[in-house]
Image (cartoon, rainbow, N blue to C red):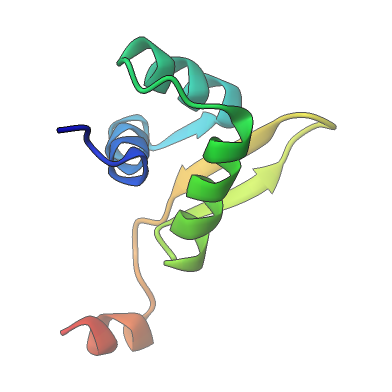
Amino acid sequence: MRYPLRYAAFEWLKQQKASTDADLMDALNKNGSKCSSDEIDKVLMQLEILGLITVRWVGKDRRRLEVVENLPEDSRERRQ
């Protein structure tokens, strides 16, 4: 059974706290996930919509990924 890419990406980002999208792709490819840049974009969008990470552009082709440490009060109440 293949571990879903979204969960693998989020677990790796939680360990790193902050990273770039290129580092994430390299780490996932080393683990045997073999993902493309389109798949990474989709996963990052899903995680950002869920409010688990933030994505910021640091250059023309590079993005900085950060895990959201403190969830806003509204989202905590909805999840319980």
